[in-house]
Image (spheres, rainbow, N blue to C red):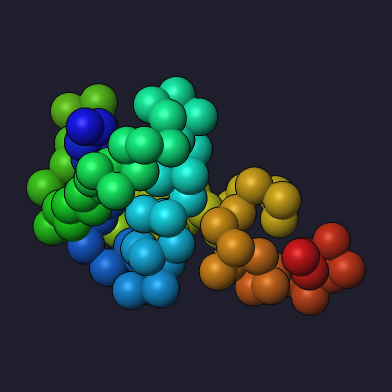
Length: 93
C-alpha cells in the first residue's frame, strides 16, 4: 500500500486545494501500483509552521513562497494566483 507524504507550509493550501491535491496524487499513483490498490493508497498532507523550514541556512516562510509564486510568469503560478497579475492579458488563465 503506497503512503505518500506531501509537506506544505501552513496556510499554503485551502481545504479545497488540499482535497484536489490528494485526489490528483492518488490518480497519478494508480498506473504504477494498479487499480486494485486505489482504496489503500494514502496521501498525507502535512502542514509545517511558516518559518520552520530552512533553505541555504536561512529561515523560509509562507511570505517567501508567495513572493516567488507572484514573481513567476503567469503559466507557472499556482491556479489560485494566475488571475492576480498586473492587469495584462497574459495574466489571465
